[in-house]
Image (cartoon, rainbow, N blue to C red; front, side, top):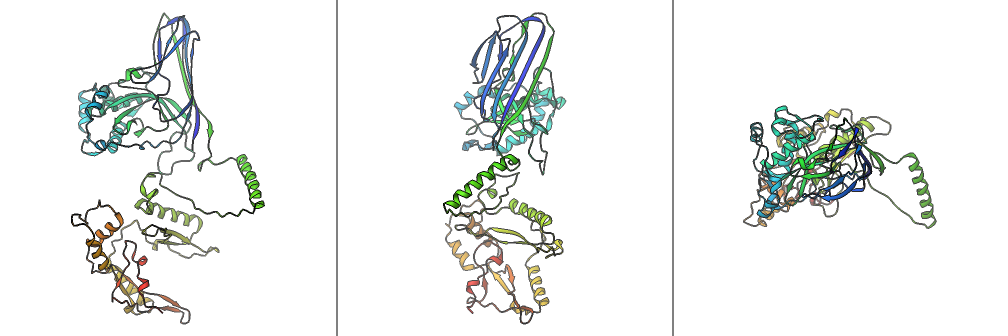
Length: 542
């Protein structure tokens, strides 16, 4: 959902005597490559009697060159812009195959073009020692960038520094303290030492307060906020320029609006210029951001007035549908995804996953505690969609409307995220003890086996130059099943079954012998739990 904001930035210099302002350069217009859409922009400069010329510097940044023909007692710069704060996934980019892992080498032509962004300016002893501790072993390029960015963040404590200029890397490392521009320059130089083309970025940072508090981490700013900020960008073939904010240790997102991106921080200063004359200066500045449009969303829904309008429209539509004898049905259910790893396959295309199962278990227990104390939890087979080789898992809770508990001790329910160290011997002991307690014959217990004919046939269909024990095979499901079986003994039982039926005549449990044409009970192929793969179709018809 988009939040449209209006950003207002004003910087003013007041002189107690008229001074002659020299030609000034203002780098306060969003760069062409800004990923945050800027739908409106204005720049107002005082004194009004001036000449302005919009230009582009050698790096493609917009700059306003302003000449002041007369003396003045003030210099004021006001920027107003409207930005669309649409959420940006900072990891949404492609990579050239040769640049997927660090280290890599830029092609010769690209190396020439990136030469200004590879210049090493800092090489002091503290900096050398700090660089020597960096792990430069082979790893994914994204992982390496995140690691390097966070290392700068962990090394340098943030401080608001009003002095002009940027600290050297030696100063920053010695103090372990610096402003955003100091951390950005340290990161730029570090990446260049690592053989990565990097540039310094000056821009606006917009941070909006979250609608709701974070459940598992800091919630961010308490109020909507904006200010001039500095960060770094690194050039990765295929992805282009990627923003890295060492102040937060995160990649640049929709709140980062670049104004000037240059090889040297000197060329990225928002305002450059001076004056001649004797005068005392009074300096002031302000930055503020205002929300001017917000789409309703889950965390900030419709207002009461909007709901009245929506309900009125709904009533009107219902009347028209009823008049036309149009009959509709509606279905659907709420969808939950992880806030930490929402792009993982298990939250998008896969039916199951380790994190999904773990979080689902936590959620169903919280729902039980809130809505159904004493309810019975069920973990088992759910929907089985056409085209999917396995059924989905279903986590359910059953309870009585009168409030009487169905299950009294939740501690007796196993937590599937824990390893209890149980094995086949435990399963055999459990099911025989269960039969004894229910007054049933132990001879009714059947052991379950994987079907050797199926898996031997599957193994025979695998090409002879393909190792089925490798984990990176294609056709995931069949090969994983095959690998799972081939790592064990096909002749060993994997579990036990005790058929149960409640006899209302005897008011007790009863059982019977399951007989199969092949003697033993061979399970249906797959990797679901044994209870979901029982060969019920092979039982004698009664």
